[in-house]
Each structure stands twice: as C-alpha cells, then as structure tokens.
Image (cartoon, rainbow, N blue to C red; front, side, top):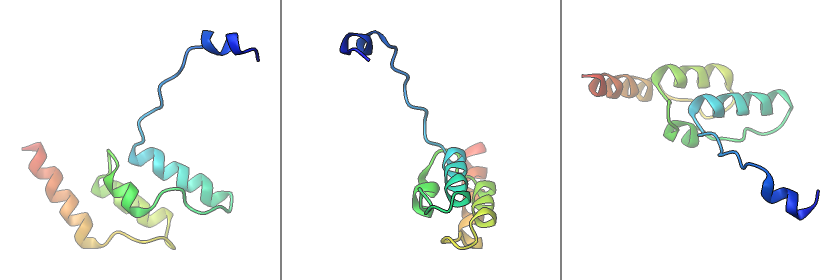
Length: 84
C-alpha cells in the first residue's frame, strides 16, 4: 500500500470493551489452547458485568479464578439499588 492511500482510508473507532466481548475473547482463546486474555479483575470492572455475567464466567472458565457467591450477591444488590 502506498503511504498516500493510508490517509484516504477511514479509521474505524475501536469498539468498547464490554464484559460480553471479554467473555467471548477468553472463550475463543481457551478453545484455541491459549491463555485467557482477560483476568477476573478486568472482567469485574468491565461495563456490563452483572451477576448473571459473573455466573457465566464461573461456568465457562472453571479453572480460572472464580467469583464467589458473596460477590455475585453484592452485584445483584448494587444493580437493584441503581434501578430504584
């Protein structure tokens, strides 16, 4: 590619990294025999990490650091407060 052509291309903004995207990126990495790209801490701080998402993490990645029942309950209570 010529340098001039690079400036003519539209640059796509990166998509926001959500809990759902992290979950599927980790799942694809695991299926490919690679290490998980995102840790529990990354996932916990991502947009869209709800109690349901934490349960999915525990189900998909049994060998990874798991969310405790206390963390899941706390997430549910936090979400309930936000919806009021």
